[in-house]
Amino acid sequence: MNRTYSHWSRNLYNSCPQKILASPLHACINSVIRGQFPRWYRTTKNADTVRLAFDLYEPTKPSIITNPIIIMHGLFGSKKNNRTISKVYSKELGRPIYSIDLRNHGKSPHRQKFDYLTMAADVVRFIKDHDLGQPTLIGHSMGAKVAMTLALLKPESFRDIVSVDNAPIQSSLPHDFKRYIEGMQQVELMNATKNSEADRILQHYVESYPVRQFLLANAYRTKSNSMKFQIPLETLAHSLPNLGDFPFKQPTNSRFNRPALIVRGTKSEYVPDECFPVIERLFPRYSATDIEAGHWLISENPEAFLKATIDFLMPREQSR
Image (cartoon, rainbow, N blue to C red):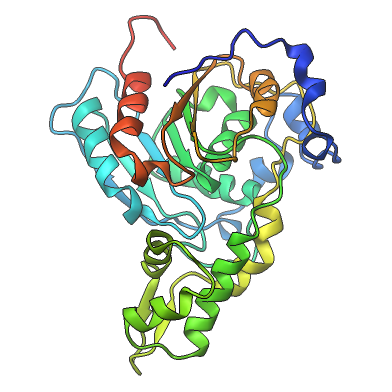
């Protein structure tokens, strides 16, 4: 089911809950308002960013649209989660697909600093290092906020974006995420040696079997055969408040005036109707699509997700 909200008045902005809107601007926003990168963003040395691990899916039949597509996973995820959709995009769209591991995830380096501006800086470095020009950004959950942050920081640098089940607002993460980390820490503390044993431990913290399997995809065995997690659990636990944040907390002059697709799950509460006036203000050329699924909609309903996103990304006669 597709739903476009272009008829919503900008005056509805005031209807958005105050907990979403009321908070001081980040110090960097003054620079962004002037259409510039913040000073730290323009002058960051490579030592302040990390080289992101990635998988590249080259098309066998290249399209007339050569812009690469960068896919970014959510919290506790990795580039492995996006193998299937990356292969489909490469085949159907004929464009190179870069599926990346964000910092503190997958094979990418670990660092204590973990917020959206820092992750955005890593992606800027990745684009520069690989000479990717003006790519498309696709991000799920945490990756969606990274994509939206990048689009608003430097709008002319991206062809278009797809934000999957997250909104450009400040909103605390569900308590579930804290429980996920506690469960993984308990698996390590109990020195589990088998997946089945680890799963039994996680059952006390995570009800959903698919989510438990998703978390256990981060586990590996040490030389002593006990299970550890490749993600830095303590760092992620301390950073959870940062991941509910969004750098653009107030109406600003920053806009992404290119196409943006907002995809949300019908059984998810991450993108409430009340926030579409904020989305419209920041992404005036947005369209919205609802997928019959929860927050993990890419794995829950991949056919509908791929159809909606491929329809959006297909070459169009008019210039973007």
